[in-house]
Length: 114
Image 1 (cartoon, helix red, strand yellow):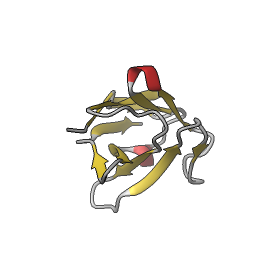
Image 2 (cartoon, one colour):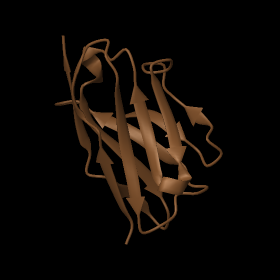
Image 3 (cartoon, helix red, strand yellow):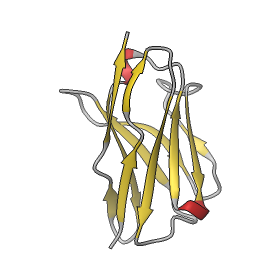
């Protein structure tokens, strides 16, 4: 059974940095694309990063230059590094991938203090 578990969330000061992890069990992540999304309170889910099997990444304008997705296939883990964090980056961050169907983690909370 495939499981995705996010970790690394917490409280960070504005302009600070934080690294989130998403560890996968049940399947190898090699060659799979992974997506990071976030959801702020009373807001829709927002895509914030994609990392494909080759390591190529894509970001929306809202986080480009501040967020960096990476992966360690040997550890079956993908990462999202947040830099120069802004108050609007607060929310629950989820990782997601697709094998036979979409799989999502339970999310990890990021709180930003000014």
